[in-house]
Image: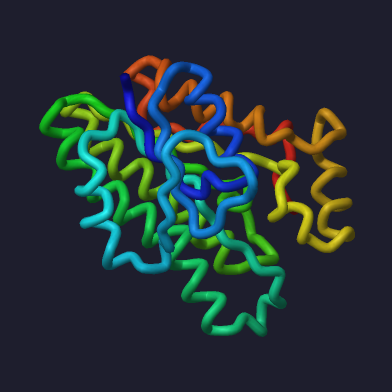
Length: 227
């Protein structure tokens, strides 16, 4: 049975992704700092702010067929008044942790000449964004995706990303109504994305997409680029 590690799997897109992989017959390892009532597969409590512990944590899990870097943090702080603790947490969870997770998982995948990595970025990566460090980290995640795709492609390991638009999650719900209204004006479908729709894209990239689909970012946003 193939094995997948999904970060931020306690809610939202991560939980929906865990359900999707489980329904496809995969062994799911759900990692999060806080879980809700539902846990899919094996529960793994871990704080991704502790980046120094990630290497040992991943080593303890054994071989992984797929890694999904989904966990993310966003604060609605004014661009000129971002607390240092928020900046540090966003950098750690959104960018440093995925980098450490990929580095930790890559060695075994390279040795097996097989494996997939999917990074969950955001449309905020493509433009100036009100949440400064969130946008910076999501853009950095796309460069991280391309860099590792280049490094691991010769070994049969593919690394891709998805860039969701406004998705029905707790993170989206915390945005001011004015921000949500602005985003929705550019959505072709006129509705918020469901987590299951993003999960379907992650499942495809993490299990079934052609190996030649490597280093790409799959937009799941129905035209909703922030302005």
